[in-house]
Length: 251
Image (cartoon, rainbow, N blue to C red):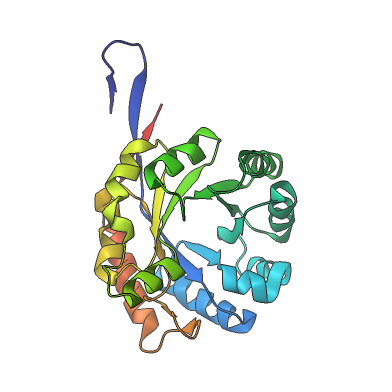
């Protein structure tokens, strides 16, 4: 659908996007990551993420192994890039990543470098607003600089530290609607979501649903969670994929 804005000729289009389920492989062992990835894909997960712990432990080797094992599957390299943006994105693209992550709090030139590398190597850039004083403004900033996706992210240390002081733990859903309304690119919410909250993300207009700690990864040990994870993932994927197309604004 589309509609005209008053006092101008700009047209905003709402484009439907099917929900995507991504699993964050926040593990420190490539063999366990490969096993978890295979199980997740059997359960219906769409994208794989080489999480930051995996990249720190295994580096480019880990991304290459994921690409060799799962040709044709999108792989997000969660680099959390703060500097050296072009080189980091280039290296991950050559290793087989299809998406890389740059931080909103990096210098503007770093974000521009990652975006340029994305164009040069035909990969997509996910901009992460973790730690921004104004999370909504941070998301818009990432879009303005050319990122393809926004990750609305409440960090691991932030959540746990605030909760340890007896305060209410912040949640990505607190400002998710505001972030979605502020940008025209797809949004993903990250940061300690419960199962119910993860499944609700498309209702907030965020079509990319990431599953990580505490849903699939033991947040304390950084290993695959115990229990019947494959059955749980299959149920989650079925519920998320059952949504109709999620409207994403485009102009």
